[in-house]
Length: 325
Image (cartoon, rainbow, N blue to C red):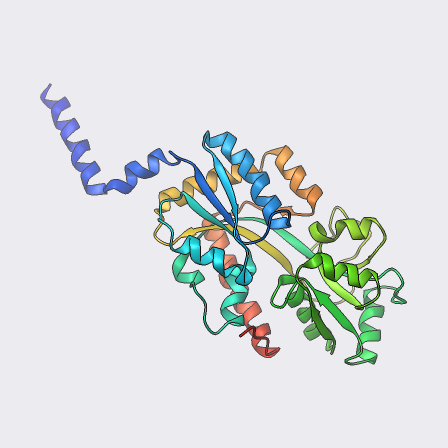
């Protein structure tokens, strides 16, 4: 009896020393999760969150509510989540604009991605594809670069917005190919694609999730993929590396982040559940069909990726003198 009482007392003492976070992490998740998406409903980030969120809800037997909060190049949503309780019940879909580009594009931000947010997992990538209009006389990506180089300042390219992954992917191609082209930013990929199809702009970089309908319908023509490998959905479209353009790799990278201070055990528990959801065969296929490369990285892997991407893209943004102030 004495030994049992001593053991019980020791466990109680250890629980007190460990603090409330241990017990909290063990019970997580014990209530609904609020998932903030910094873009309007219907886009790629929204689709990703809702697809994974539905599976996540089933797994944890808790409601997962997706809340769309667009604006200010994702800063409105990021600031909201950064100031939310650090308990794992408010999370953010963060792309490379949120975690990488914004700190270089703006001199002042309403949040600090490094100090205010912690990585949970990279959910997926949206690889970029160079596309031209159906009536373009450009034969392939090499021909595009040759023609653009021969007419500096005469070629225009559209994007889903200044500072977007689509914009910066083309800036990357410009640097690697020594091109001078005029940027025409739009409010979203759809209007840019419409003008590209109509011949108002010469080219653009677009992800498959946004451009699949235009590509399948023959309204735009894909020339090259800014990815390490060919896309399974476009097996006949070469990568830039295959064509001799090394280093032209770009994608919209969407992950989950939580408020800084969220207990490590809670972050780990959330990552495990999200990774399980992503790796369900039906979910993976649904994402691939939409144009997303599923990932499901660890918090450490996602954090390392963000740091690497900051070095890479901040250098490009500085050299190209791109600013949204």
